[in-house]
Every structure is written in structure tokens, then in C-alpha cells.
Image (cartoon, rainbow, N blue to C red; front, top):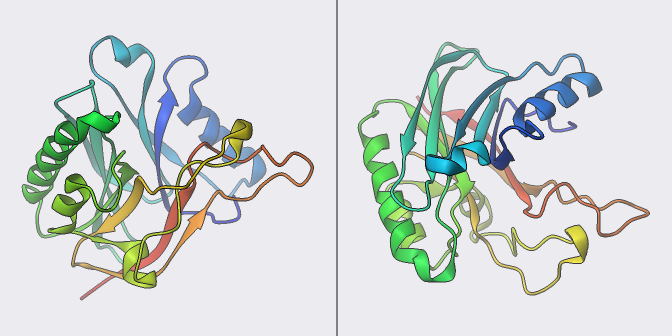
Length: 222
């Protein structure tokens, strides 16, 4: 909780047991009483609704929230519109696209569906985060990059070395990037970095997740 982020996008959250989104909210408050997050979950469609979904946690006032059913593997995206301290609005989108090496076409269509949805909500700052299951050179990321820019790439000139695998559970192998934080042209990116990468001092296979996280410091352009 050292970061104390205003808004967090999470994926692969269990729905009923444990209720991970709610557990994370409560855990944050237990560690620091000043961290009061609202939780906005969206679970997969079909039978997968019982198992898994995504969630946005925000300390900023929520103005509106909505979700989108994506075609393929019961995937979903959601948006939470928040009000910034200066009164400006920001739309925070969260997504987890289809998995599987052979399913790049499904992911590209899901990204197109998501971007069309975003285009229908123009005139406001937009952030899009999530597990895209696509490498930087893949058509899905190429499509998204036509309309949005990667915050990490904007700061460093390239994507990070990896977002998977992490050492969790003894995983190993060459690293790849499949997680991203995108912004539209209403947003100025001041910094971006990989996070949740701290390893337990005594147990080197214990880290926060099987994916590294991405974080950014941003502001709105006039």
C-alpha cells in the first residue's frame, strides 16, 4: 500500500470464494485507515460468472460505472467514471482479453469492440488498463496503439522487459509483456513504472502476483 493509488484495475479475481476484490479493499483499510476504496467488479458472462472477473478500486468519487460483454471466452470490460479533485472527469477502463496463443484474432476483435465503446464516450480523459494477453508486436496492441498510447512506452521509449512470468510458485522462463496501461490525448504522463515486483526476503518465490503490475503518475492536459 506504499503506492496509495487513486485508482486500481485488477483482473482474474475470484467471485465467491474468496471474494478477492472485497478482501483487497478490506485489507488495504486494515493496513492504512486512510485508504478507503470503493469496489466496482464485473464478472464474466455465462457459467464463468460464478468463478472469475475483473474489478476497479477507486478512492476518487464515482460518477458512473458501466460494463461491456466482449465476444469470446465470456470476457468483459468495464469503465468507472471518477471525479478528480479539481472537478474534471476521467474514465478508467479495465479489461482482460481472451487467452491462448492461437486466439489473437479474437483479442483483436475484442479490442476493436472496446475501442468503439470508448469512442462513444468522447470528450473526457481516458485510461485503459488490463491483461491483453498480447505482446507489443501483436495486431491487438497495434490496433489499440492507433488510438491510445502506452504510458510506460511514452516515458521509457519501450515497454518493460516483462510483465510475466514472475517468480511466484517457482515460475521461470523468458519474460514477455502482455499487460498495459494506455492513455488518450487528454492525459499527460509524468512517470510510469513496473510495480508489485518486490520479492519476499526469505522466500524468493513469493511475490504479489503471477503478473507484475504497471503504475503511472498522470495529469489532465488543458
